[in-house]
Image (cartoon, rainbow, N blue to C red; front, side):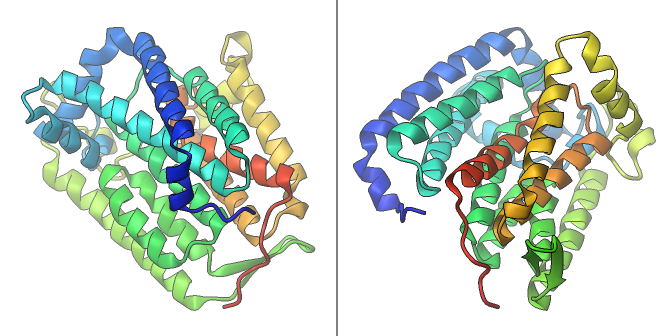
Length: 335
């Protein structure tokens, strides 16, 4: 692994300027995809502020809608502020991806190529919705995947969790990883053994705190759906349950339309990463487990054909594939 530092990133300003231009081009394509739905996107974000989202599950996702509201205070309409927010979020993600690929061992030119490849996958995954919290979610999970492979300490993940939980309940997976990081992976036997009670305790406490925040914020801030009715069907858990429908989509329905690509990509990706599992070191294996956990969550609570939900898998798949190709990994840290 090269020892890529932020000060080195400053010396590569030409590449970051290129990445900024690539981000601008990607944003143009993104807006061409969603131009007809921008009013819907703005209403979806602002409805969280008003307490009238389409579903109670959206009510705790406060960070992005309020960031857009803050931007609108500059004299912009909420819709225009949302466009600016998406542009900045995309720019940050593009620069972050380039930095992450550099830090994981790629030369600058190859890191730029990998970043463009990741953006291509991102554009292919576009569907009929792009929520305000999707941008921050992608940044958060890029940092999570990078932090796992870099071997960040628990303090960094706690800080990431505190920001992420304000954006979306998916940040609970950061707490899950902290708990998972209490285990050490034995690649020869494909076994995990408990080696750090402290991380297990911290992860468990954050899971409880995050779940409590999600539940309480939904109950306190949710007024009604836009039609004035309560979301009674989802009052208890908040999230929807789509497992059986998603299994039908993944194995049957997708093969009668263009979503066949989604099924093939998921099956192929899982087979590829599972095939390399015995070669993974401790961090790589945990990154793989987190990818599986995220996909399982999408299968249970999401709609698999709403492919924006798969955005957060991009950094995990890209970095795990990169590490497999470069043969990267450090020995497990001593505890």
